[in-house]
Amino acid sequence: MNVTGVYMGTANISTQGNVSGNGSMGVLSIPPSLNKALNIFTIIILFITMISLGCTMEISKIKTHLLKPKGVAIALVAQFGIMPLTAFSLAKMLQMDPIKAVTVLICGCCPGGCLSNIFSLAMKGDMNLSIVMTTCSSIAALMLMPLLLYIYSQGFTGLKNAVPYVGIISALTFTLVPCAIGIGINHYKPNYSPVIKKVGLSILIISGIIVFSLAALVVKDIIWMVLTPDVLVVAALMPLIGFMLGYIMSFICRLSPQCSRTIAMETGCQNIQLCVTILKVAFPPQVIGPMFLFPLLYYIFQCTEALILTLCFRCHQAVKPPAEGGGETAMTDDSSQMTTQPVLERETEMSCDSLPSLSPHRLHGLHFGL
Image 1 (cartoon, rainbow, N blue to C red):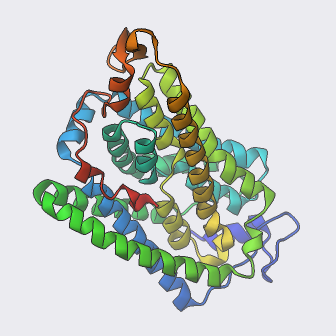
Image 2: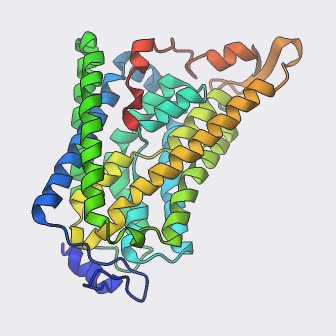
């Protein structure tokens, strides 16, 4: 498929690197060697992140949640129902040009990221559900992400044949391999998991610094093209809407507050590493232009908003008066009946399905989503 031709015909790009009259992105000229270096280090970051995620997973936990899939099923519906629709709606309302629209759609259709595990922990959520959900959404994305992109791209002129489905499926398949390797290491050689996480963190930090430096060198003269009002509005509203609707949907489905907070974090936090890899590797630089930096804007806003929500939750926990009789009415996800649980017990349980809580060494390394 001729992605460049499709885009050139629909977005009216200016070859001088300026924004055309219809607000389209200009052409980004990157030396081949520099572009190759960016691609390599972007893939390295994604590979290490997914191995880290796999090293936090336990096969027994996956089996238990799959046998009682209510929480995971609701989380999957929220992830692949709310976020793609939000991305599509915002892009249509703001009348984005094709390349901006496809960038926003790809970000909205991405699975959940590892960052959600950190914020689920900070929000006293269900860590078992959080990690299983991140893994399951990565697997489900192999089928759902291309399907959703195909469906929603029909609403934009010029995108029907411009989405690089082969590149996206290849990137998604690539994420499953290191995740499976991490799960295998954690299952058969659990003593190696902490070492892999520590070594991987060092490599991740170095690679991240290199990618940011190279990206800054590439876009230093055209970074202003990304910081347009419509792009900033989308980057700010998408994670916030995901957090809010994820919690509301879980509440409507009668999940416990602990599970609802977890699903809210899972819904709003996207896999930014995967999104950057797809935009950087699957699209020619002349097509995507500086819009491959959009996931970084999204990352900044999702972190800021998640931190604010965490702070509000912690303040609420600190100042709220104790419930009468030392208990509080809570809704469990395995029954539609109302049950009374002590507040402390309910907030410290680590699973919607009464799974044993994760040991401390299993939680080590959740910062890899940063």
